[in-house]
Image 1 (tube, rainbow, N blue to C red):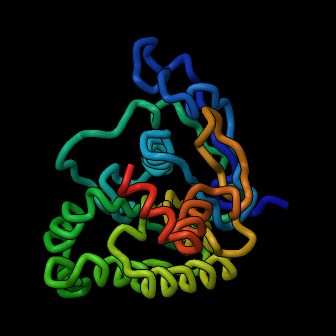
Image 2 (spheres, rainbow, N blue to C red):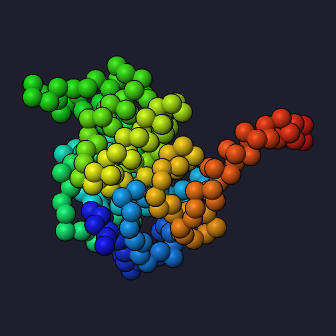
Length: 238
């Protein structure tokens, strides 16, 4: 039984302009629907493959601010999100999330600045700008990630050391076990190692499910670690 908050998405391509760049993104242009069966779903693929574009559209269609934050965040520093969110329809489950957060690594500075403005005596600022980028990401995880919440993360590993990625992995796993749902874009072979997650690859021109060891993140990392000297010799002497 599918018990996720976001169970399925469909795209009405009649609402996308015929000249839109979205129609030129190989992995996205043929999507009619996508199913979310697991508490944790990863989007993986090469840069420019469309995974963050789709993730952002999901977040906005679900009610999050395009630049990130909770559903209470409402501001715009730079209007960069695509029209895809207007063509996207989300099938929701019967449960309602108790909390949620949309994290975008690239616009986190804007969210951290706005958080100061939103702060009051009852909700004091976490002062993200006074912390390192990685520390701020983990503070968000500790503050907002709860059981029965919905979390949409775009490259959460961007500011995290490998050790901190393991900490985040554990937090995500525990919350998912307690009823939370995660949809995550990542290049991290560490985060991708979370057991029993669905991994959608955006490579090869089509969105498709794949196994952990089939991801480029795993393949390239394993190849580098196991063949570092030979690989570097070939790369640096060509």
